[in-house]
Length: 99
Image 1 (cartoon, rainbow, N blue to C red):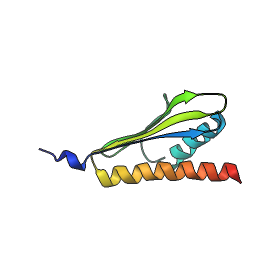
Image 2 (image 1 turned 60 degrees about the horizontal axis):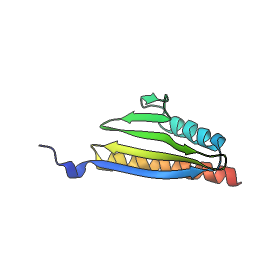
Image 3 (image 1 turned 45 degrees about the vertical axis):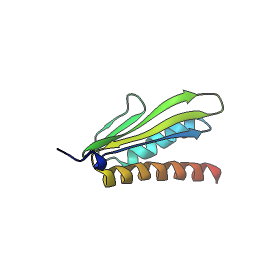
Image 4 (image 1 turned 60 degrees about the vertical axis):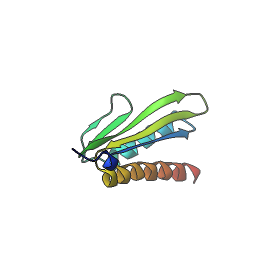
């Protein structure tokens, strides 16, 4: 039986000020993981060995876009790395928009 402690589920609710920035974020994450199978029907889902990254819109207002960055993985180190990469891309989008 596999040790469930090695599994990872990580979730973060993030906010961007516009749909344009949200779409830019999705585009950049897609580019970051371009070698993995992707599904962009509902936000963005990236499949990687033993898991997936899912980014989905939670709520949209005229001033803020709320979305979830969710990773589920059977490999904790890989899942953590994927989650951190997505957060790094989010920080890059913030920094480009601020400059």
